[in-house]
Length: 581
Ligand SMILES: Nc1ncnc2c1ncn2[C@@H]1O[C@H](COP(=O)(O)OP(=O)(O)OP(=O)(O)O)[C@@H](O)[C@H]1O
Image (cartoon, rainbow, N blue to C red; front, side, top):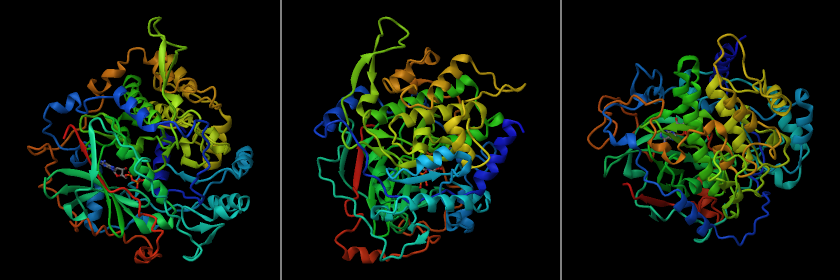
């Protein structure tokens, strides 16, 4: 079977299978050699200066009179079926229970042993699938293997602290409400949260759920939905992520929601989705973000001939992702979930990283330093910013990621660093070029075994994409199994940027470069908002009624109000004003 065929099969699997959840304790076991006395605020100011950029993209200046990709049925068929489904009240696939956990079993004996490490603090592996599997008519796929590993794994970690699970299951036994202790997220002090201050002003939240009306459903994850909403007062459109508190409690994902808010509110970068407001109601947390009209990069990739890109096109996206990862690392974040599904496209076609719920923030971030570049192309330009130094010594033990993208050190369970992001960049690059990931096996066991033991192979069949040796060299270096040898291990993003493959890339002018795919957008109104007049609107226009009826309600939230340890008490309700608004 050719790689392309294989990919098509994979598509079926992705559509058919649900995300995999395994229990674990959201970890606090990260170790950092950097002193906790370091001053994140100063460092972040430095980073902001380093990245001080006008957020406007060159190409967005030209008034785009076309509709977002998701509206154009001709070019982007099924791009917005979520809307259809919402209107038709189709079945919510998340009502299908996620089915199990990791199983590296016999096919990957080494990893099984190592993964049983009691140091692992969190388990969360996503199976490749589209986040919109519900509208694609996928069926639930049972993964019986997963459960067995879940059980054996937890048998080896049966200390009390492991009783927290992503899905409320402990050693395969469903925890009762009494048993499930909801850990409040520690109230952070004003000094703990630092927001971008240069071009961004953070204030008390100025809106609430009733300030918006739902237009339609854009996409869905495990604990929430993302809606296109219109702010009543301004008629501006936003993407609103609505997270169910019930579900977060049930799946022990409270900290993930906090981390996502923190990262979104702190970040200010052209290739990272912008947060405008965050707030909560009794039932939900709300993240009001910039609406990425270009839709998912994953979808754009699927629509390309052969579902892949030419080398020069992939280079563009890999360069933008590298710039975004560089920024995140400088800010002290490890992204940990890079994949085409998490890359959205701005209406200009530039990338916007989204979905930070698996990201990890270093407790204290180090200072960026300047080091002698090993592979600098020019003698004058012999120094590089060491972007790794901000996060270099930060290790975390969570077992998180997406199956085909997981780095070897994560499978081994011996802790991982920001180097996992460079590994995932290598996988992403490969997938863009060959329409499949390099270590994909017949099942999860084989995939993990391949990740641990197999060298990356580049297809050489007759009509295989023609890829330069420089490009292959970059991918090989990003996919080195030993994180200490991997590209990025010396100076972080600078190592990657200085690879000869990127010789002609003008890093500072990336966002002024015309993207290879310009989303065909439907007509916009005079404010640049999508013209949705012709669309059938969602049944419920009330954002306060998010209708998360797919999930079982187990803990009455009103009970939480009586508890002094309301886990959402310290969720930051803020409004972020950006200087380009
Ligand atoms: N800013 C945005 N603009 C347009 N569409 C968006 C935006 N944010 C999210 N979406 C859509 O909603 C989908 C789900 O979003 P997201 O991945 O953030 O949700 P999630 O609940 O965190 O998912 P997961 O379970 O993978 O963590 C995305 O795949 C995308 O299609």
